[in-house]
Image 1: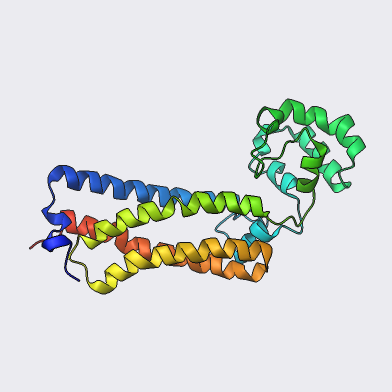
Image 2: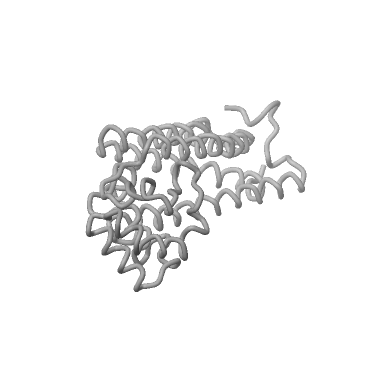
Length: 245
């Protein structure tokens, strides 16, 4: 594969263009690292064991955690909302959930806790990920274990990723195209991450709605993305600053 249109490469670009491209590549690398940390914090804790997401973590994240409800997981120590509730109130809410989350106790004892601790954000809902904790019909489902992601939830996170990730992958792919890299390396960088993204997003739906076994596809898509990002991020930097001749 010849480098770029009419043989132009990033190594021939002006200093401002190379600096801008370099900073863009570094920003994407930082975003990728941050995404991995987010995965460890939000998905890797599904089974109660911190660290990189396991197959069970991914299965439970999309198909539902059979051991713990979404609300209990959020407010338990280490959960994403744990810092917003005191230890005594947490114990009371968890006891209510374990007791089957009856509506009379919710109105008498849980609602005041939610009003003081939660309704600043959970008084209105986006209809997808943020239930209204002041409405028993809304809160009831998130007190039940084994709740899979709904179609609405899947649609929200899918469209956010599907409309953003390909944009920066195409930009990165264009930078890789404007290098002297071999055709095979360009195919890996320009095709593999986009294919991995499609597999990853598709398997979210399949894991949640068809079978947890499809979580393997989520891992496969992630691996394809990671492998493709290696040449996307490193080869243009080499071309701009280290390549000679």
